[in-house]
Amino acid sequence: MNVKHNLQELTNIATRLRLHVVDMVAPSGQGYVQQGLGAADIFTTLYFAEATMDPTNPSWPDRDRIFLTTAHNTAIFYATLAERGFFDVADLATYVTDGSPLEINSSERMGSFVEATCGSLGQGLSVAVGCALAAKRQGRASRFYVILGDGEMQEGQVWEAAMYAGSQGLDNLCVIVDYNFVQSEGPMDLVMSLEPIMDKMESFGFACQEVDGNDIESLLAAYDLARETKGKSSFIKANTLMGKGVASLEGLMFHQLRFPPEVAASARAELEAQL
Amino acid sequence: MNETLTQLEAADFINRSFKPLPKAYGDALVEAARADPRIVALCADLVPPTETDLFRDELPERFHNVGIAEANMIGMAGGMARCGEIPFCHSFCAFITKRVLDQITMQAAYPNLPVKIVGFLPGIATLLGVSHQAIEDVAIMRSVPNMAIFEPSGPEYHATMVKLALDWDGPVYLRMKRPETTPDEFTPRSLEIGKGMIRREGSDVTIITSGLCVLESLKAADTLAKEGIESRVIDMASIKPIDQTLILESAARTGAIVTAENHNIIGGLGSAVAEIIVEEGIGLSFKRVGIRDQFCEGGTTSFLMKKFGLNSSAIAMATRQVLEKKG
Ligand SMILES: Cc1ncc(C[n+]2csc(CCOP(=O)(O)OP(=O)(O)O)c2C)c(N)n1
Ligand SMILES: [Mg+2]
Image (tube, rainbow over all chains, first blue to last red; front, top):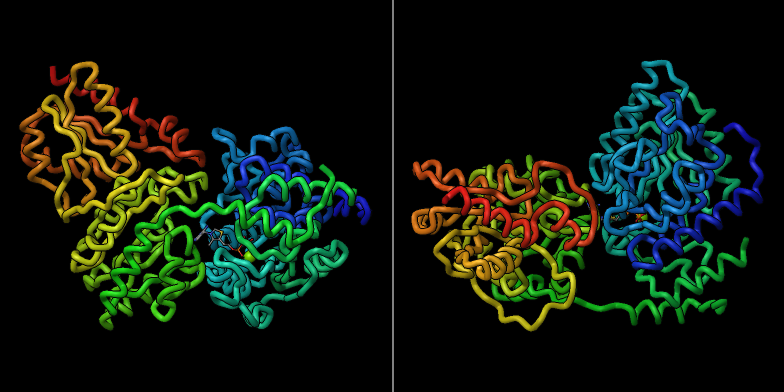
């Protein structure tokens, strides 16, 4: 964290990112609008406030690394990377078009700012734990942030990784679960509930916090506390609202919302009014 | 436009933009389950994309969405099969083969249980990119003892996939592809285990193919016919067990073979055909069309088929080359 954050500025950035999400998904209907809008505040706070990185040197070995393990949430991810200066904002227009590296599932063929190729759910936390262990051994100060999906936490591998991180007291690791309560089928309760998730992670040795994942100040405070916690990995349950920022979409619990032009135009108008 | 919609208005637009596609496989599975109470369906949180929504709604007590947990799904299916059930397990091809190979070998294949493994998104045919592309699944599953592999070439063969899976007394892998657009009217057609189907007759060369490459091969054969080349096209939907007799007869008859598959060239249909020909001691002109041992990317199917050399022009080109070698 190198700059003192201006809350208003971060809020504006989040709105700009949401506008990109709408603009990127609208032309083809491909992409995940609801998750992108819901996670915009997590991305904004991590990339524009919390993590130390250098867009002119994305493979800087001492950078903080952010792993998006729900690799399908790319509209918000690419919008963030572009606005943060990793590539040209104009490239966002190629999202999910044939030949573009801006694929619907992110892959490291885009560059080293995609820290691992994670479209197969459940694998990313292991990679982050590996990186965090290596950094410890190499004496690096880097921190490792993982954006996990709540549905994704049903994968057994997530728990294997969490158990190892917990047993090692990896305090350079901060896991943020984008708790939007939706998986492919719809609401998670329809399939298999994670609850009581805080108790579970606590018992795995994590320092746990629960925050409103759409409240920028709360997110920043949670990262602060995680950074100050020694001898334990951190787990932040960030409760997010699908479609956040667009009243007509807020709370519509669809994994892949169809996004007809009328709805996109209305969403755009709503977001623009917030700038 | 600066009019903003209410939630209800937005929901209405969203509902109206929904265009359902036919689900010949899913329908056939429900029909089979109604006739055979041993059949149950499992799905790892990909219900509509694997056509199991009808099963979920019609036979809820025999359906499990197990969550995003493929390894557990296969293990549980093994348990169910040990207790007399016939579990059909569903996910994308990539996740239900390579991700859970050990569970498949130990809990389905070694005990030779009727665990039916049903994958969608075969080969490169998806926008979803390298993580969702299964270009090595046939090679992997082919090397598992007791496992049968069937791959339909279009929706008219989807219903018969359920029958083939049930006819094979053991573990099966179905390599399925959903139609991307509403297909023309089609009549369901049947297939037989271990039998290739001659989809076009010709005496100069044989194209042995499966899945998405069957239509491309038929198109290639049309093009070649205009150049005076007559191709036999075999739809090898039964990839394992494979139709050895038809392969050898075609080798003898045409003296030139091309294989075409939506899969890496290593270990798939092309390899299976080559193994049979070489072991028989036949020397002939031969070429495999497939992904050239590289990772791919997401995109529309037609774009990817062209870029990675699986479309009709790539198949026609390969066919001309084998004929040149044949002389
Ligand atoms: C191993 C694996 N299984 C299944 C899928 C298909 N899939 C993609 S996204 C998704 C739901 C993810 O839910 P969640 O993790 O909560 O992410 P959200 O979209 O809510 O952010 C599924 C099942 C996958 N990508 N990987
Ligand atoms: Mg979710």
